[in-house]
Length: 300
Image 1 (cartoon, rainbow, N blue to C red):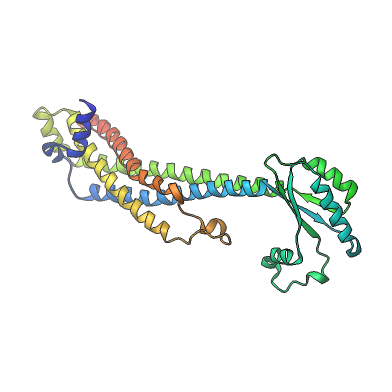
Image 2: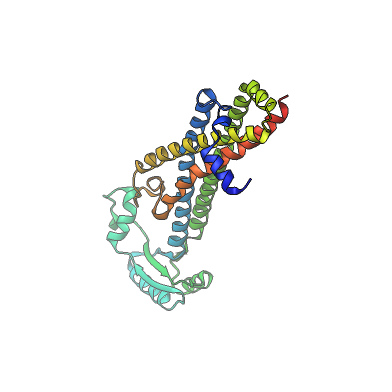
């Protein structure tokens, strides 16, 4: 049988063969509901994976190109050490810009943790210098040696200890999302297999009659494969639409909310969920074909 014929048979079907598969009932409802539920969950698993990937990239890029220099010194020496630190940074290869944060900027950084009424002038808060790196970056070990010699009160934080755990956590979230997606596909295949086997067992007498009149097992299996594939596609499409509607109702991405308000699709990512019904139909096709072939061999 040619590919065109198989394609036509799958979507057009055979009226006589279709009578083998009950058009409604427990197995039909179970297949459609399972496909819809799994597709709904798959949308969120896909959204989680894509959002975690964006988060890992953003954290990696943002933290990899910035550093912080912290200067702790007596009040009468602070201005001198800040000026010395800025001179060192200006002559360091790989440092694009270096700027000492103003009192207002430091207050804004500390406000989320200590509130808006933090008395900076009465607290021994170190002076922060924000460093932006070039694409090549700088030699952190060499810069630390220079600072130790010329600015004893300076401590360089290149964000390595912050960046690696955050990126690793986001990467694991992305892996969790794809793993969930695969498990959802496996659960859908298992449920459709059970439904197909139940339908085959329920129609054992009809199958026996078809065999008596000369029907081949491939002909009978094709009817089940077509019907369950279309059920899987229809259910997955409905679940995908419901999942996309639910995703659009989530809060939009905000800088303050971070990951929790960015759990969704952006740009071209919206095309990925459209593949879920196709994947659902493919899973239903493979699961039903395997179940029908095995079950027909068992039937007398």
